[in-house]
Amino acid sequence: MTESYVCIDLETTGLDPKRDRIIEIGAVKVENNETVKEWETFVNPGKKLPQRIVELTGICDGQLAAAPEITEVLPELIDLTDGAVLLGHSLMFDYSFVKRAAVNQRLSFERKGIDTLKIARKYLAGLESRSLESLCRHYGISHNAHRALHDARATVELYRRLAEQFYEVEAAEGAKSLFCPKSLCCRVKRDTPVTVPQKEQLYKLADKHKLILDYDIERLTRSEASRQIDRILAEYGR
Image (cartoon, rainbow, N blue to C red; front, side, top):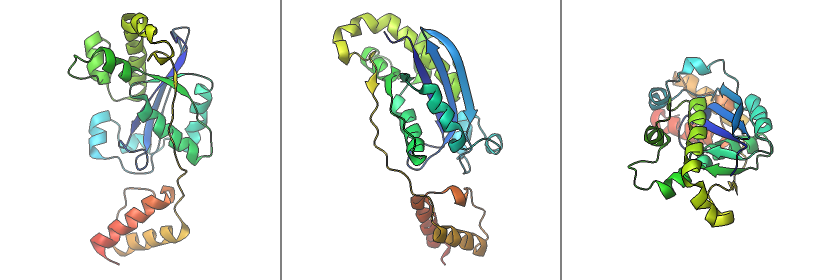
């Protein structure tokens, strides 16, 4: 059984890594089944938070205003997880966001991981839900849902409970065992930054139509800027 790993969890502005941004990262480093380090940080996403995310996480725009950007904190996360197995609940969701951020900074982020959701889906199919929140209730694990470090801590404890209950029977699967780290495969193309003409057009449109934008023009990608320009033109005209 893997007893040394780094459990990661993210809070984001939404579910699509192509369009949404990381707003909080939590990580718990475990060595020989003992927690040796915890790390958390807010991340400024460069855009206003959707109300549903504020309600879900309790995080507000004011808390993120002075937070570092992902370019500042990502190297520390990469260093923390260097050479380590990743653990997560629906791990590919978190991994895909970090991988995209890494690719955009021309950094490498190739890891192996273990997903507690996959284990729960196999062995706890009778439960109404295998969400982290539901599984914590099932096992009596203390959990403050939808905050990154709290979710990471809960996932570590969930992994221990699942291993206690199912590791031996799952070990019969050999290398296919869900408790064996698997390579995390996520193909990502680097986002092209917003172009100068796009920035100029957005600033002009915002000024002309007296718009209060809920995003930072300077941090848009080329495709995001194109969508915003099309949206403004469709709604307000030239």
